[in-house]
Length: 323
Ligand SMILES: [Zn+2]
Image (cartoon, rainbow, N blue to C red):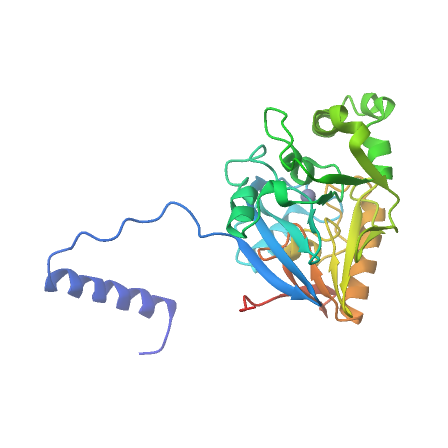
């Protein structure tokens, strides 16, 4: 019999039927309600990188989600990736860099404040053998809630008691400005981001270090201006012993849509044309230089390589591998 989907299903049904006839059903193992831990380590020169999964938010999207592509085109791209249409799976992965002398966390997860299906970054940090008190430095890419909410608990307590917090200066300038906040009073979603930035930063403002993108923010971690997604959105390159990793932050996001179609401008990019320009440029450099890349919203463990394919690019995910 040729191998078809139908023959496979029929075969499985026959096998199940035969098994049921052969012996009474035994009490089986309970079906687990939780996924296994999401902490994945890899080596970068003498540094150790740990990808820390925080969860996935399944966001319903409408036909206006991408300004310069139709709902049909977007749904076709999702379907081509074997994903359901009209739902965007937004995966969150924070990055822990162990330099040997310092533990640096780039972005901090959702702290369970956005959706029930995300907020496990701290559990995975524990699996990685690190307590929040061990973290020396937090570096933030931009002020969207999924990147900064992990700095505090819902009750406003600092989660990483001993960590210095470093943020991009242009991001601070934009989101902490009351004039900008009132200009966005009519945009409920973005207005909430302004309030949330104040919730996280207002009472710790004097302790927050602000860096100019382009600067080295920690040993071997250089910030890269990647404005467009937000006014001060920042990517990073991590270097150790001749090896490097490009941490793209939200420059490319969900690969099935915005790596394959880098010109598409999603509604969450505040300056769509500028973000698309930065995205194409960064993907082009990553592909040409065969760079190891990582991005906050790539599927876990959120690292791999970028290749040119079709009219756009594609992500070749890294393989789960022993150390
Ligand atoms: Zn994000």
